[in-house]
Length: 132
Image (cartoon, rainbow, N blue to C red):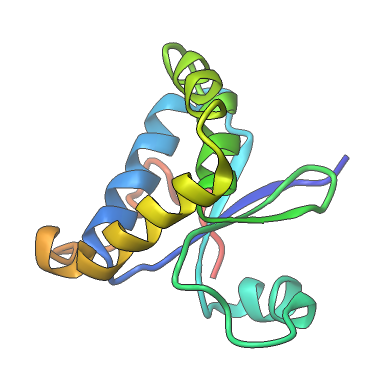
């Protein structure tokens, strides 16, 4: 089993909030976090892509599977502390095409709805959870 990694857009306020939620609710420390386009992303994810990456968060699972959009979100939710696994189970009932349609709609307006983070999401207390 490998390490689980959440790749996120470091200039997006919604992504920043998602990372903060994961760090807070993943007390077991399963997930490392790294920015999209960072060193780890270029090394581990980019070689797997045939074209441009989607405008979305990505998760590399402990088995090495690469997940995007709502599949990545559901994977994250299922591994966090309560009540998030129950939320993930409910959301799984929605077909992926509909979930991803909603995800893309939010992704288009996320920068106007959520201010960019004022400072990096990594703080002294959680720096060990972040990769470049």
